[in-house]
Length: 156
Image 1 (cartoon, one colour):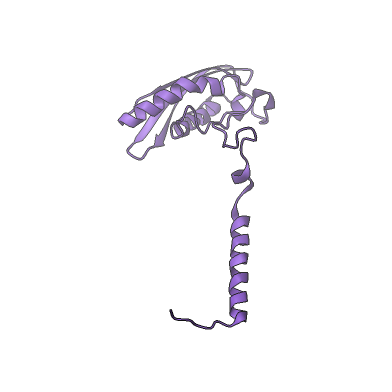
Image 2 (cartoon, helix red, strand yellow):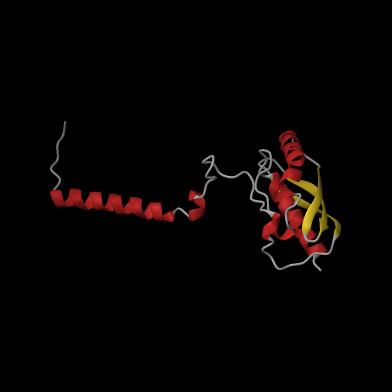
């Protein structure tokens, strides 16, 4: 065993640098990282919000609107077609159809389509933004892109 003598001042300085580094890294985490579902301790599966909190100022013309949205998967660029029925600025009905190019995409789009109504019907169009539905997170990117287009179409 080789033993070297390191001056105590160097050891103290090294320890202080290590502690300072930990504090800096701890300060880099955002409040959103710390936010979890208080009941389960896990992240929420959707970011759609309650329709009673119509926080935006835009108003929309009642009707049924359709738009397409695309999103990138590890294999391909996929797309979904979204049809929303809007009344009084609130989503009353939703229909999503997919055209999957990859076998995995077919599975995830199917899961997304089967669960999307539970997430968005009754939600104010201004507040509509989903992140994960029934285990599918990438499909929501195409859905949200289509919703933005629908917002533009429906703007009064």
